[in-house]
Image (tube, rainbow, N blue to C red; front, side, top):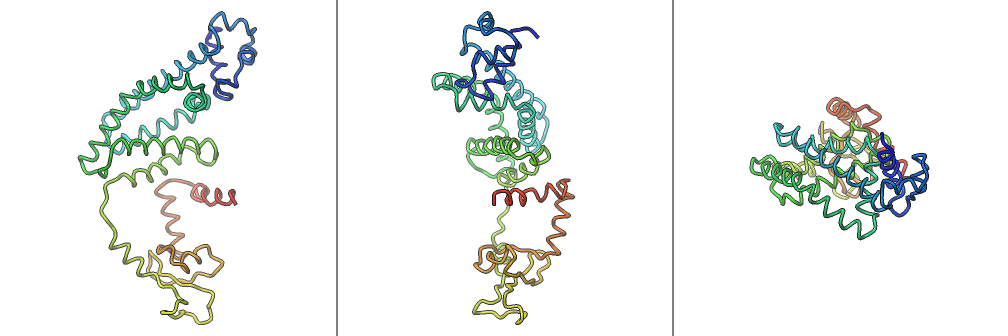
Length: 292
């Protein structure tokens, strides 16, 4: 690697971690093992070096977009969207400096620099955005994806993709296996589906709050229990006031509950379908406990 390339590599790390304003030419020179003055033999100044790093990062981004489009060309619509969702996240998850550098460019760079960079990025993304809108539009025409404004749907796609990437950085438990789990949430949201209002109403009507004026407790000795109808086996089961579901049922905030036996069966099925470990299935519970 030439000295010029080493300078750019050190600059990428510095700009990614400290931003344009925070990074100094002195620390970049020290990281390379040269004098600060030697940098100016290769670059005119800090802005010139920053733009050189940007050009490298932007070219890699452009290659990523082209590769994702090419590799997914013969896939079904759902698989195309998933492939590009997953490949993007894994690419930036594996390279922290490039990921952080983009944040510095788009959020924290000086206004005059940021504006020019944004125009350049939009231009580089045009083919990818056009392809994505074509895929979404085709999905709507085929009745696979619900009809909506494609540009808005694409924005939701990008927001979930970039949001998941950020959370994978913050929470170590969110490894790559979670990508497809979150993808399913997005796909179910955009997928064309049949209305289930009547079924939901029937399920809601099955919920009976024992202890209310128009009903009597099944067990007179269990006055602290509310009972609900299990969504799966349709049997009534009691919920003590210490259970987290108690208030939901008491105040009629949720009509969907399952008994403990069915709950265990559901967890086992989730593990089979997703291939996730029990620890991963329980991740959100641990996360909530952290917040408390």
